[in-house]
Image (cartoon, rainbow, N blue to C red; front, side, top):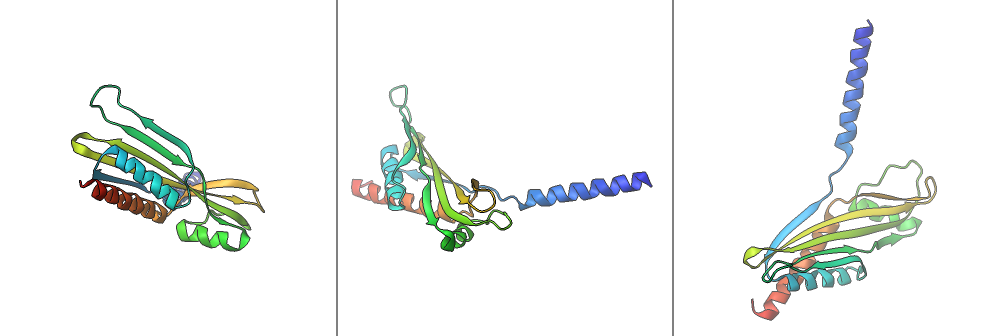
Length: 176
């Protein structure tokens, strides 16, 4: 009888762990390669950030090549960009761009996003863009703390589309 109860308890524990693991959503990571110079893509990243209302970066790093003819790399981490503020509209914005974190009775007063973009020059005139975003918000009633979670990918797709559009515009100006 003890063995049967142990087996049932083990099964329940294993199945509940699997259910929790399935509930976790994966972070959206977008990767694009475009035929264009690092400088044009980098300017496009900055323009897209300004357009979205996130002009001030937390980190803006360009790693210049050590040797002549080497390849550039850059990292742009935006500051936290405020999407909504106040009790009335914040939860709606969180629901639009992600799954609302479960805090029973929680009252969300801010919703923010932070973009992390890596730009890497590659051989053959290609430049690779890797983009991630992280959502966060302040819940004031239960935890009185900031919480972080993944978005549903909409913000990342919009930002990547803006970067690509600005890069294509830069390339057309240069006649490439």
